[in-house]
Picture 1 (spheres, one colour):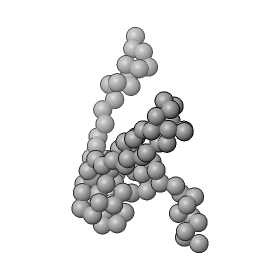
Picture 2: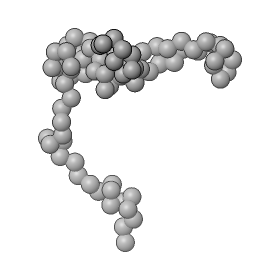
Picture 3: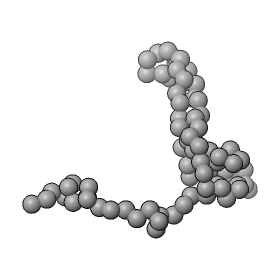
Picture 4: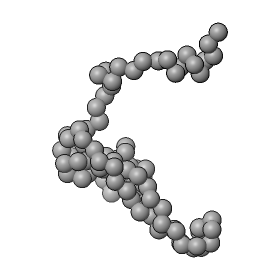
Length: 84
């Protein structure tokens, strides 16, 4: 008898039915892997040394915009404050 994990592994996905994510600015559908580089102070670093942390994001291949939903550093609270 198949376990639940093996049943899930056999699921076929029809990507033609999946939503294509588009750039919020120019509606382009091609994205490129990009990185934010975050500097961590030695005072808060777990190693006690300054560190540079890369955070991978996807930017529009046409205009370079990073959709808010694709940006782990996006702070929705800050945007709400600036919109008012």
